[in-house]
Amino acid sequence: MNYDLLLVGAGLFSATIAHEAVKKGKKVLVIEKRDHIAGNIYTENVKGINFHKYGAHIFHTDNKEVWDYVNSFAEFNRYTNCPVANFKGILYNLPFNMNTFTKIWDDVITPQDAKKRISEQASEMAGITPKNLEEQAISLVGRDIYERLIKGYTEKQWGRSCTELPASIIKRLPVRLTFDNNYFNDRYQGIPIGGYTQIIEKMFEGCDVQLNTDFFDDKEKWLNMADKVVYTGTIDKFFDYSEGELEYRSLRFETENLDVENFQGNAVINYTEREIPYTRIIEHKHFEPESSAISKPFTIITKEYPATWKQGDEPYYAVNDEKNSALYAKYKALADKQDKVIFGGRLGMYKYFDMDDTIIAAWDLAKSII
Ligand code: FAD
Ligand code: UDP
Picture 1: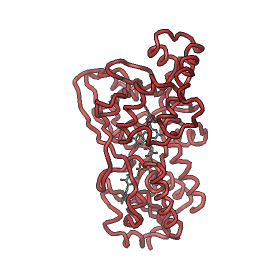
Picture 2 (picture 1 turned 30 degrees about the vertical axis):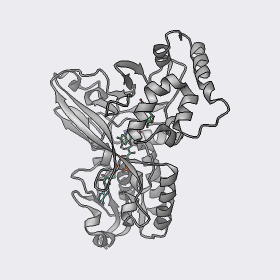
Picture 3 (picture 1 turned 90 degrees about the vertical axis):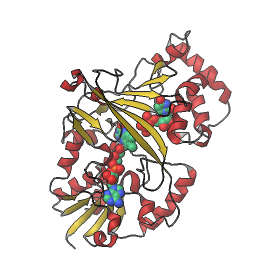
Picture 4 (picture 1 turned 135 degrees about the vertical axis):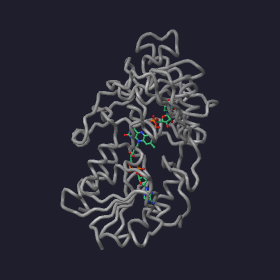
């Protein structure tokens, strides 16, 4: 037994545990199957542009302690996420706000007009407690917006009909009667100047990190390497899928280098119609508008295609519907019986964690095990 702690996976969850453990004098080993640290928040500098390899990552939180923590590893810029939706060639502001309402409905000018129009449209749901995403969306913003900006995007993203999806997914998006295109309601928001990878590098200082190393290539050996193991891979795989496979959504990223200075004028444009197979195009240079990369005569864009997950693919999103939540509960019961291995992070806990949730969950775990 060489280490106090083995961390399987080198993402943000492990990095937070590692940082707390090293502060307390623990000897920590990290193994990661990819050829780099940082998990899905990995960014790399490509010709001066910080490239978000696994999709757009915008840090936002209401928690001051979390904000101060991440700012202790890197300086953040004042980026505010204002994605735009493209539906059949017409552009609408997101999240749903007065800019969206006045564009969708010609005769809506004031917040009172918008409120009236939404409640007229939502009246088709009168007396119904929303049971699924479609009903929830129509009661929030009405059918016009649902059909143009929600239905196609959501069905592509999740690979199933909005009537089969939980209402909770759409509750994440703000609806505002002001001309405010900020996608998040949180008090703090930004992108680390120079990207996320530097943060994770600093968090792993003092640990031994071994890349290109899959835990499952020698499970017994790794389990015997440390007193405690924190495992941040998929929980069903750890148990050899003994209770059945959990479902995940995967993504395919298609990146292009273009010889244009400014391709789309915004970091994120969502394509909300069903017929276009990708959900969004990211133009990476716009995440750091203060950087000199912004005026370079080239740009990098990434199209994000949702995909059905199968074993061997990257599992990006847990599917937290009833069926999968029940299956996860079975794995959680098996996990609770392990005294040496603890399951953490988005994949180990089968949860939709934003980065701030990930840090908070890791702090909680660090308190109990270190
Ligand atoms: P991960 O980053 O997935 O790290 C797990 C690591 O474990 C991976 O590196 C993996 O390779 C490794 N691993 C798995 N199995 C093994 C094994 N058998 N052996 C060795 N290593 C293994 N959050 C926000 O706050 N804002 C955003 O804008 C945002 N955008 C997102 C966009 C996308 C497309 C996705 C997928 C997520 C987004 N998130 C966002 C969430 C954010 O990515 C997560 O909160 C965070 O990355 C979770 O960290 P983690 O350590 O739990 O998981
Ligand atoms: N959504 C939508 N239209 C959009 C953007 C989002 O209908 O243009 C819905 C979709 O169901 C998505 C959910 O809102 O899954 C949450 O969006 P968010 O941007 O938070 O998704 P994520 O960052 O997880 O991809």
